[in-house]
Structures are given as C-alpha cells and as structure tokens.
Length: 252
Image (cartoon, rainbow, N blue to C red; front, side):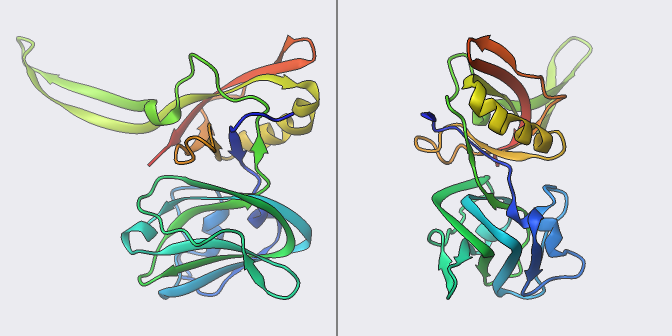
C-alpha cells in the first residue's frame, strides 16, 4: 500500500501521439516542449490563447501535469490541461498563473481520454521548455532521516581570488543547480517489479520531475536527472527492496 507523498513524474503522453499547436514559430517548434531539454523552447508565432493538442490512438490516463523553463511568469500568462470527455474539453484543474520559473507539479483526479489539450494564455509571445503529463508514480515510502531536500542541496562552485599574502580579493560563484538523492526504501517486491524498470529506462535517457512531499510541500518540485549510472536496487529486507539514486537538478 502506498502511504507516502513522494511523487515522480516521468511518463509524458505528449511523446505517445500526434501533437499540433494552434500557433508555432517555425524556429521554435512544439516538439521542443516535450523533448525534456531545457536548452530549446516552444514559442508560438503570436500572443493570445495558444492550444497544444494531443491525439492518441488509444485512450490513456493522466493524473499529473508538470512544466519548467518558462517565462509566462514575466507576462502574467496562464496554463492549464484539458481532456476530451466525448462532447467537449474539460479542465483537469483551474488555470495556473506562475509567479516564477520554479518547476511546477500539479496532481489531479485521474482522467482517461484519447484527446488532451494544453491551453496557454499570454498577452506576449512566451517560451516554454518542458511540458509533461501522464500517470504519476507514487513511492510506497517517502524520504527518511539523513536525506537532503533538493531545494537545500545547492550545488555551488566557489572560486576564491587571493593576494600573495592570502588576503581575500573576492570570489566567483558558479551555480550548478542542486544535488540530492532519490531514496527508495522498503519498496515491496511487487511495487519494484511493476514500476522500477520503467522509471530506470526513462531516467537513463531523460530528466524527470520529483516532488518529495506533494501534500506538505508541493512547491518543492525539482526538475531532476541522474548524476551517474543508476545503481541497481538490492534486497534490503525480506520481500522489500531499496535503491539510492544520486540526482542533479534545478529548482528555479
């Protein structure tokens, strides 16, 4: 039984169907929004309300929506996800108005459909790097003592400048995001066999969204990626397994 509030978002239905944007700058195509890269962006050709429509060959479910790398917050823009109920598009949640560029992860009641729509409204031409939605993965148990929440794991390089006598002359600060660990403990054999390899296959190639406590601190979302080869899990207790995955990521 899942009792924790730790969530992973890595399934992205946008990768599984036909995606069309109602407006698109040819130099910043809609595909940039779901390639999991923060170095490229989707931009429409005009401002206003822009729809990103997904059509699947078969119905699939989603109960999370996440995004990162956007400038909607600078223009008062809004974003939401809709699903087709057979007669009309319905909101999965009320439209969000980002106030900064922190990664956002929204959990909602699961819906199943063959057609989905991301609706973005902005008075200026916006850009967005990553949009993902699908079925979230809940860990059976959350993080334990000795673990560093990603927002506190500042991965900062300091380069000091000193005189011949050792006097402090200033320093350069290079921010490299954050570092932390995704800790999976006491996971049942059933849960591991159903979920772990799917996650590993994704995380070996692409980033993912990680929220350590969706109920207590939903704003503590990190856009994460593995720091090295993902260590295999081990049998830590009879009928239960554990794994510890070093991660790097961005929280702003």
